[in-house]
Image (cartoon, rainbow, N blue to C red; front, side):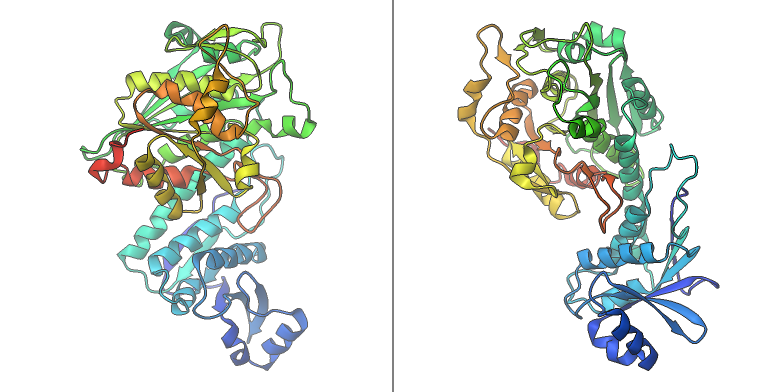
Length: 494
């Protein structure tokens, strides 16, 4: 299915379907035929409602915007999503929503924000993962034309939203890809394909991972027929920047069976192709950094493997020697994510030169009990970094909630035979998992995002189809764009 094209024009193209926003207080002015249709169908111009009507020989799609003065960007996005779905048979969809929405706002958003919301919502709901279908799903318009005055700020907003959506779509494609086809080798190959003048990609294969001494990554990989990979991505701004470097570390478990301690539910096994959601968010974000002129130098580190059952698989009771020499007793082969992240964080500590690091992973299934299915958990050692991530979250659709960092739980990581264990059963398991990661990043300012609850959705919603959400791409772009603006951003302490 081809990608939706979004354009700004002064008038609707000939032959296009026109979608027009309408507020509740405008219903009486629509004319008797439309009012009668409204009575019969129950259309009340509430935000997200749509209704076909006619004006002479022309078919018009009315888009509800709710009460005048109360429309927010969320309501506008819902209206756009409903419009795209209703216009499934149209080739070109034109809309006056840019003018309509900003004419009825209370000043809570401007034309640029409205244009960005329309663009992002249309591209999100139009997304389909069709690469394995014999006949791709072709429903939906191929072009969206926003009608109305557009100054430079509006054009910039549309460009940014379009670029961000490309990053989100890449992340969704990666997470939606089955684990049997998105092997570590294939995942690293796709990363290499993103390399360009501002993005350097380094892939460490099995031999290199062995030479590096990444015992955590090798241990998790030991039950698999697929070799692991360790991938570095280094972004450089077009203009030399004095901002400090940011490190990103993402979990790249391309499929998680649970290992010898096999997952007990078939539904859990089916969902585990998404266990590289953190890595996908990083890759999606870094793929558009250059296009968006992100001013911060960023280095990313992604350990890639699947976690399988095999004759050579690591066992409960095994002791792994990590990249930094730390020994870890394996108490749970299904708590593999923290093990591979430990290697990656230790490598980032030694090689990145970063003043701050953010790890992001589908780490604990229990995160959903703390935050629900719409919000990811955030745990930080450095409040300046945590506050920066919360601020970035407030500027986009990727929502975060900070959980406490409880030092008293650290004693539960102790092992009688190794430096620490990967114990997973503990109070506040999401925050507890972050405590395992913390020592590996050393003194670098650090925060961790557990996105297990938000990586995918199990049903179609107004925001898009079931499957991968591309969660985290916008958040990381927002955070990287503002990181280092203030001198104190990288100088927090424990």
